[in-house]
Image 1 (cartoon, rainbow, N blue to C red):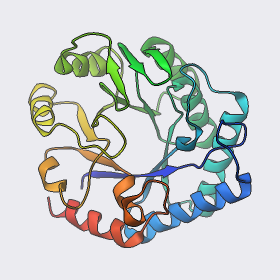
Image 2: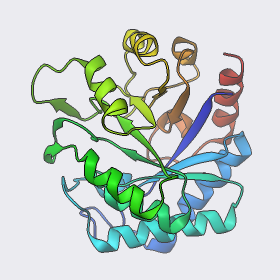
Image 3: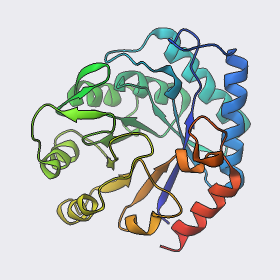
Image 4: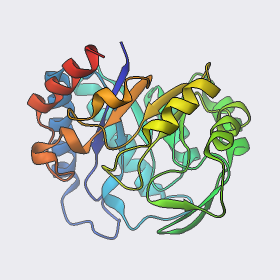
Length: 256
């Protein structure tokens, strides 16, 4: 069975630029999404501070780490059968590793692990050594899922995506590579997926954006999928997760 990861997009957390809800309400929304993923047949989720845009290119504030940690612990308490990952946007890999170690989460997603990307918050430089050292210190069992040429970002020059993927996996310490489109919900390059599966036979490749019931068959070579937007009601990212849509995508992936 291919890995299926549902995304829990946290609403703007207290202290972030667009925050307006009580944390209790933010938490209840996240718990509802977690329950709907389970109802639909997905037992792995990744929790991210999606609503905190505009993001910092550097380390997030301590209260952000605290709120994400609190949310994950509450999700684990209510749904102990869920496997959980962490993504601290825009690119605070050390915070993600720290949260994962503290909460027992099994993996983290890091948008820029190697090389450098120009983003809406500025230039983000990969820091694979520091992140790998921190993982070794806290819990070497935590898996690193790393994007290459991540969405909402552009390379500083003409990178070869195959070489970037090889370096991210073989030199950067990534346990899996994530392919995305240019933005949230945008489709990934099917041909690049095919090439990477040929070039990186021992590395798991996940599709990290744009997966839907309509196009899932195009990505049958992938080892897994991180799916959020298309599983929301009316495929709108700010809406709750629709368990009916979850069931449809799970059945479609099972048939690949």
